[in-house]
Length: 54
Image (cartoon, rainbow, N blue to C red; front, side, top):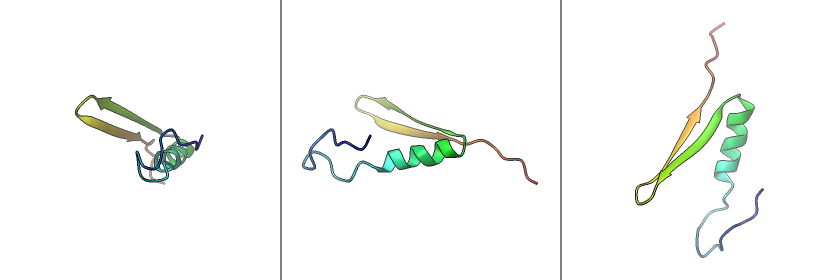
């Protein structure tokens, strides 16, 4: 899961950021996804369930 697909020269960082975010969101019953368009970049969406107030 944490295997690098490109060399460090190509992209910086550890590559763990989105994997950690996805684990957190899924643990809370939510969903994380990305949409991208060539030449425009990517948009990341996070959807979490609403918890009623006690």
